[in-house]
Image (cartoon, helix red, strand yellow):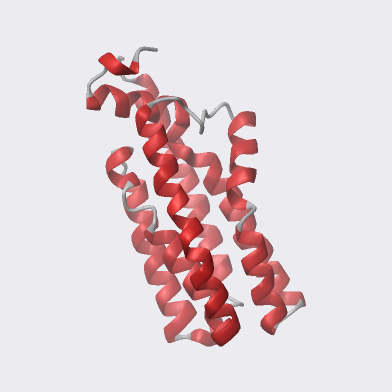
Length: 186
């Protein structure tokens, strides 16, 4: 495909179709949050917070694997795919902050991961022309703030299950948006 000759709208349409809105990453994310919720039933405290920190790095690689299985090209050569990768890479800069939070106030780890991970999806609203990404960003921010900070006793017990549901709803919404885009004439 000659991306050099495509308009911005054509690039967006192509990326929506080939990457399928990135929905496999949200299946991976739902598995992460579900695993953290289940771990919260078994372990607690700083050990559990460390599991959050170590586990969060598994989401993208698992998303790539699921993308292959579900025929979503998450590594598209589309220039907007590269932009999506850069936006996603922003999360690498969150790691030092998460480490400091873990050391100083480990009980805030679910809040910090949920809020910052959710906020980095904001540009995808434009890239994918997606209301689902708007839902994701706002609902993750609200859930993380209220269940991870305001009602912090729910951070390790309820928040991961709420975020699991948000991620599953996001995966379903993005899959539906990508199916709808695939039916549009190129």
